[in-house]
Image (cartoon, rainbow, N blue to C red):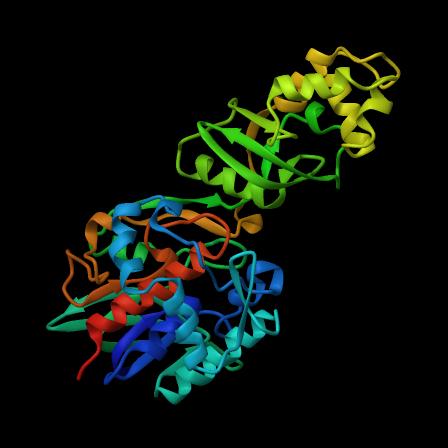
Length: 392
């Protein structure tokens, strides 16, 4: 069995791992990435556009705001923009969301990989870390190396270890067991920022229809775009609401309430409907997609050919209620809620249980809403750990 050594061993080769390898100063970093290439998951973010951060991202967007606050204060969204500018990435802002100027996630990955190499970091792909064990003042990692010639196991010594393996969302993996074995508490991963499954009757015939609206679930109210699917709801608004499910604030059987005219009161909607002549179809056709108008009429106990009951239609418009049945699985999730308990880490993301061990990104039990929150956490957490581990 081959034995080697390195200075800082980073387990993972995704967004947070690569950013850490660029930010750390005066230390040699080795990234161990299980996949054949580093950063693959980053290419899928933002539907391939890569929403780097959001100018309005705040601690309130996360499940553990008090833990996140000092980390974001030290590396806020504008610092992320400056970091990427410093490594050669030009950005643009759209509705407060920051994207690479090319609007291609590959541009982000390209500059990170180049900057990582320039900072002296080494990336070893096809390298799955299967065990982390404290040894003296450092650690010994068991690494399964896979290449065209097969697999072999190596022991790698390291002065420090950083867990940056992300989560099983989309194409990621779950490596929390590596630190759980060291005594860290873990909350199992569950899908977040993921489409919602609802009762089928409420979405019947609406597959593919998009609508701007407000939505309420378990006391959470959000505004944005809903995309109806045959199984339920997608779109940014539904993804943000799914965080309530992931965090245990909502569950199957709860009601999702859509408000299709959030800028008007129910009384104002009723007055508008009463002021118009004709059947339900004629009244609603100028405001809603024809298929949505049909579902609104159905919810009001009417058909499109009936003369509208203004109060009933207004209530259906303002309180279109669906029954939550759950969410889609991790393969459809943008992030996962869960991870290593933040109680076990300090503000620099150093383990309070095992000296010399750190965790960054999604490996920690930190999840945010849409709009660049989760990549902002990747950059900010990488900065915190890199600051703690830099020399000089």
